[in-house]
Image 1 (cartoon, rainbow, N blue to C red):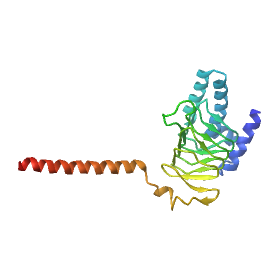
Image 2: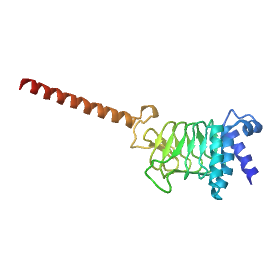
Image 3: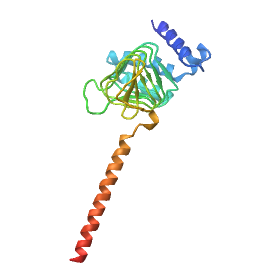
Image 4: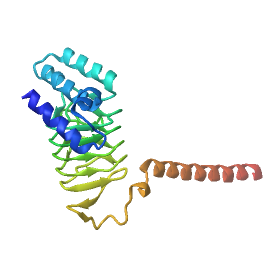
Length: 219
């Protein structure tokens, strides 16, 4: 069974990565494949209550590949991790079959949940580089998450999520009406909005203090 899964995964790399030239190259030189193969062993140890050994394998793999997959995470068949550096996959994450993850992806939690804390990723999902999917919700089958998006709520099947926080801009090949002309590079960053609001409050306080000082001087 392991050999068949490995063969299928190598074929998935060949299909999804134009730079993949041979089975031997993928087997020996692709860190994403190494990370998922090692995760199988770590997850087996985790499921059989060898928790220390499971973490040892996962941390050694992180050191060698730059990809951190908690041994408790459940990963389906034919996962392709392209480049892979900086990927983090949390303990209660579940990933379906035929998914593609790029570098810098985080499948994590928000710190507000207990038990199931991390996302469930459906089948045939693509998550772009730098994207963050945070929380115990589902990203539906055949969906796409754009690079650098921050996903904090459920993504339906056959949808495209873009931005920070992410919004659904397309579903089943059709643009979603309530989002008008949303492009990834033009989505307003909520952190920027917060800074602008704080700056406005600071200016108002300064103006208020200036008025108060003038009244004190004239008194």
